Structure formats: C-alpha cells, structure tokens
Image (cartoon, rainbow, N blue to C red; front, top):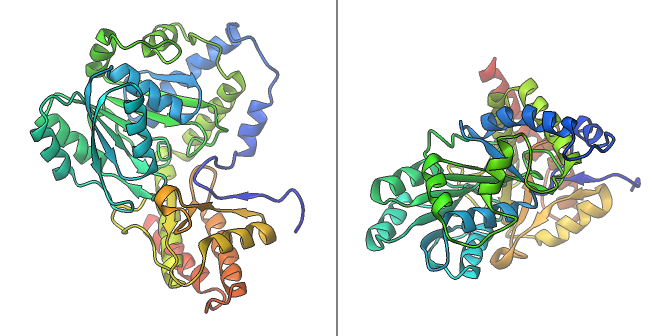
Length: 387
C-alpha cells in the first residue's frame, strides 16, 4: 500500500478540511492580544446558529468529555437526584460522571441499538418527582442511533421542573439542532466530529432556566465553572488559556458551514446515511439500528456471517481505510462507519467499494458493485428530488 494514505472513517476524530488545516497553521498570537479578542468576537454569533440558540456558546479547551463533566457540575451537585438515559457507551459515561460527584442517579437503560421511548422517561419522572436534571445523548456514537431529543425534552418539561442536558458531541454540526425551540437547557458538543476540527475544544450553551440553577449551584468547580466562561465571553475572551490554533480552525469551519449552508450540510449527512444503509442492505449485512432512528453521522453494522474485526484489519492494511469497532458489550460484534463533517457522497462510494473487495477476499458471496450500485441509486434519487 502507498504510504501516507489514511482514509479515516471512524465516528471521530474525523478528517480535517485542508482550509481548516491551513487556518490552524497560522502563526501563534497571544491569547490576550487584540487578534484573539477579534477572533472570538467573530466566532460568537456564528456558533449560535449551529446550536440553534440565541444564547452564547462557550468554548472550553478540553475534550468532549470535559464538556459533559462541565454540564454535570454546573447543573447539579452532590446529592442531587438525576435521571440519566443510557442508550449506549456515552450515556453510560454521563452516568459515571454523575456517580463520581456522588449524585443520586436513576438510570433508564435502553437496549443498545434502540432509541429512547419518551413514555419511559415520563414514567420515571412521575415516580421520582425530585429529579432535578435529565441527561440525554442526542447521537449515541457507540450504536449509531439518534434519540428523539425534541420529544424527550417536551416530556421532561411537561412532567417535571428538571433541566434537560444533552450530549450532542457526535452530531451537532451534522444534524438539525434547535436548542431554543426544543427547550434544551444545556447542550454540549465537541470539536473533533461534525465540527471538522482536531480534538481539543468543547462547546456548551445554557438556557436562561439553566443559568439560574448554575448561578445558585454550590457544587465546587474551578476550570469547568461556566460562570467564569460566561463572564469572560462577554468581553470576547476566555478565563483560561484557550487552544488558539483550534480557534483559528473553528473560524474557518464556520466559514465552510456558511458557504455550504446549514440546511445543505444536514441534507448531505442525511444522504450519506441513506447511501451507506442502502449499500449495506444490498450486501446482505444486518444493520444494528432501525431506519427510523439511524444517525446521519455514523452507521453501526452487525455482521452475522463474517468477523467484523477481520474485515476492519484487512481494509486498513490494504487500503488505509480506518473503521471503528464496537464498544463495551458490542465489542467484537459490530463495526461502525463514520460519515460526518468533512465527508461527501463520493467518500461513501469509495468506502463501499473497498468493503466489497474486503468481503470478497474473506470469502463472502458479494457481487462486485452491488453495494455501490445501491448507494449510487440513493444519490441519484435524492439529487433528483432536490432539483
């Protein structure tokens, strides 16, 4: 295989657009210099559009998990009664963060690969009227499902006074997100997925309801204290040293979003999802999730007649194609294709073509082009509809 070829198609980190790479290679500036102040001033209103909010979106230098922890320690405190919806590995992570801070955690465990039924959320809230916060995952990266966040939020607000806190790390920037319209109280995402940046930034916004709780919360916190970030952001700054190069990249990512248009960004992700799923079905391989709740940013595949780990190793060795395996209880049972951010329908056709070769080499009964043809048909039909 030609060296320096890397086709990164895992559900994050995702590939970086060349123009974003160039932006991040700009000479370093002081984080308190006017250049950085102007940079943050440019970024602020544009991030709001990605979140679907009128609230300021704060930027924390840290991974997506730091954003989840920030949401926990600002929305709740030791002894708080909380509900965590666990539909996969990252819902489980939310629960573990809450437990680490000695909160009283109610878990709503959903079969991995299924989406959350809002009626189950309602039942738990009715049984536990002291729940202060409900933590949910928009896209569960480990299973490739997209939870019905708008409906979950509606149920929570109709049946309790709890805050709705949402992990949007693996989908914000790739799927429709309406924080204000859906009454999400705290929304978190990260830089390394649909936002087309390297790992290292997390973004978080809070509603007016949430700010009231945050201001009154006695939970100890320092680096992740959103009150400090809000105060600094009002002056186009950050309370601690930011990842300046990442901010340069973010500025360019937002420019790319504006040039394409967010609705077109969402359509592109939906098309890639449908192309991928149609191709996998045409190849006769089961999918983990239903079409109804499948994520536009990642597809989980559950093979029955071959070993997914062997296929992943084969396509990585021969083509440099990196796919993701399963996590926790799905380890060795599924593999996942990331199609988010800097990814196009052309990339999907390449991925499927490579998978077909890999499957044939493993002895699977696959006709060359049958998966690609199915993906092509989806592309042709969807572009006709757009025309």
